[in-house]
Amino acid sequence: MPRTNSTRRAAALAPLETLLPARLGLEVPLPAELKRLYGKFCLPAVRTKPRVYSNFVTTLDGVVSLHTKGHAAGGDISGFSAQDRMVMGLVRAVADVVIVGSGSLKADPQAVWTPEAICPELASGYGRLRALLGKHGPPLNVIVSASGALDLRLPVFSSGQVPSLILTSATGARRLNRQKLPAAVQVHALRRGAGEIQASVILHEVSRRTDVQRVLIEGGPNLLGDFYKQRLIDEQFLTLAPQIAGREEGDGRPGLVMGQTFAPRDPLWGTLSDVRRGGNHLYLRFSFS
Image (cartoon, rainbow, N blue to C red; front, top):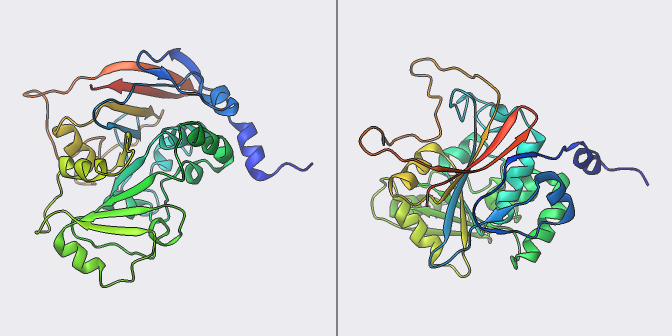
């Protein structure tokens, strides 16, 4: 039988090498192909409130976006690593909700935040994993935009691939209501003015939904910064790519966290809980519980 392009891409994926096995949580029952590629995957138990975790890729000098038209998304940072896509798909597969800011949508307007969208060659494995975890359908995609300046024709809203929720202000909701609202999209106004929406308000809104146990933050750096400021991040997945991107003054290239300052007055220290290697990339996990 001829091999499809997806089958060839899956075959090209090499397993990660475990350097420091996970120290926290219970083993997740990964389907055979995902376990072969990732190894043992553990997640802490969810108790009284949802666990919030983030996943980013960064260069050696801390850049998470080249902030250049056509090169603003994470692929340019990872070098379009297939192993990084595999890990991204895995952390999305165990999520009930994926939260992104409007800046991340602008950087990658064709994106849909599902496991299959980032790593289609492992779609069947991600689907089996979600079924084993009792999850039905894709994770809810939550887009945060206080201004409501969004194009509802973009795939995350109009494709029907995912349910999506836009968290905005009253002003933003009025702007969005001037467009035709797709059937799979909900709009919730969380404040009157058009100012920034706080991370705690975002988390409270998504936590009200049934069976939300794990919430994934995928960007951007300002949104993540506010989640860290309010001590809402339990765990950080971080891919370290072997690239020096460089910066010039005023070029707008962001780091992992923007808009907040912690050290030296109020530093945030994580605990290294897992290290894997894929080629020259390192896949790190830090606990902030």
